[in-house]
Length: 81
Image (cartoon, rainbow, N blue to C red; front, side, top):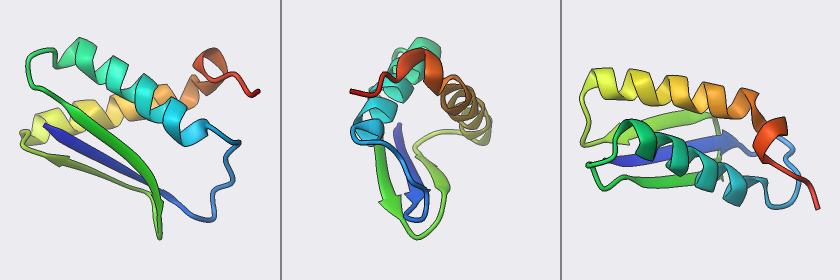
């Protein structure tokens, strides 16, 4: 599966947050979908959006939940320099 997350350019994030989010999201998705060869991409764009290519609707729903959980727990896994 290919997972693409875009974050609105107007969202202010600390330095290193995009890379940290990419790594943590990929780790969490790998736990749920270990055999799919996931590729996770997080970048700035015009609006917030989640795209799941090569997965079923149920997969996108679960990945959306994982993204929400990851975002809400950022204080646990993201350490600002």
